[in-house]
Image (cartoon, rainbow, N blue to C red; front, top):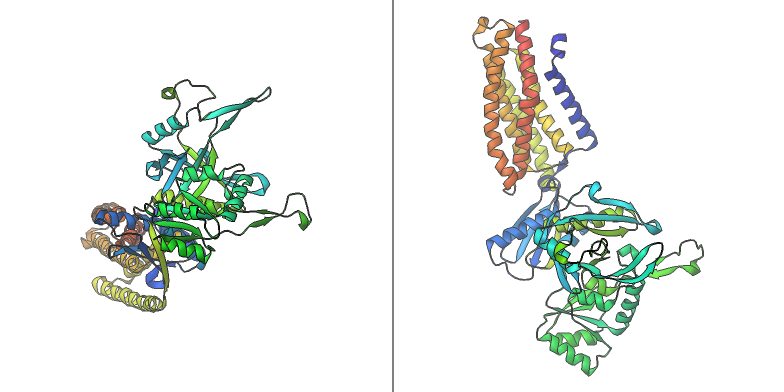
Length: 557
């Protein structure tokens, strides 16, 4: 036994078992929809899908948004040509609401300057999640947490941005200490700018939004001094300010827009008279909630008499605006000064910044924007999203039955091995190896927080089955020749020969599983992951340890 414990292969096995024990104890196993239930989303698109390629793109985008880590047992499939059904092993109400919000967005990211498109989400090539390049969080003013998201553009978009931002600042003053002071134009970032729509704004809401934009709202990334007209110009969104009731001139203007605009974007509390008027003109109403004012205490003052209200402008939400960032003199090629746009330096990566009241809120905003940008936009907007809960009752019952079936299988393997070898000292290590391979694979699943589904369990059984086969190969090689195999050199050579066969077999299995893992075939992804993990655990950890134990036992005999 002391000689066996000197082997590094045995210590690798022991260390792996300890890591698995830690992962299973503190992370625990996570079960997919098949076992623990989940949530089913039904996504209705605005129009019918035009081709199978377009539907495949929609499915891929939705899957990335629901499960951007790829570990949540997400299944997405088309249902007809205007519905997509997605299910995920998630039942937490807050998380489900967050996912539903992501699904409702088309995810079309655009940046504009003076109403002209600078670039869109399809021109982003990479988001570096590296704090050294600006990704992450930092402290901002007023106890806010600032988040930053850098991104790279392709060559064409980077050149366009450089050309359009060239010298887009003007000198407003000159300070002896600080030099020239510039006023630069603003770039506006949008997600899902409305198309084929007209904005209908009641007059009192228009006036309050105008004031709110000038005041700004740092918690929602709205800088002070933003012009309502400039916001709507960059959104390329026509609008009509209406009285209640609407004047004849306003009615005529709305009627003219109805010839080319299908949707009217209105506040949720629009008067019935105006709603009826717009419906009679053929508009489809898209209601957007009017946000409640945020009451905030003025820093340094304790009395409630000095509390202030900050409002998120309704037009900010309705237009899809997400952030406004001013150009700088450096980006505009004024410091250092460059005379010709052709000689201007291209800035890549660029940076989007925002703030949150807490670290949790800042992380949520950064994560949501990262997911949308990485998943890409849907080629067709979403009309509606409905959801329902999938009961875990049948899955739990099957999981219990599966445990007993697995136990019967292990006992059957033990009986077959006992009949085959009739050597209890060998059968014990063989069964320990079989069970430990399954345990280590489950530990790996717990470590990476993989959601186990039926396919994953099948993958574990497959890996364990190949493990039994490999142990038989190793044992037969060690026993081959009977009493002639008596020296350590003979044992070592035979183990090497056995492992050549084992590695060749494992390589064949891995070659079959890798395409399934990277290309993806729906429910087979879990099967591929657990099969690959089980096979690698076997050839790198458990089978070398078993070979060492078997050699030690036979040498003693």
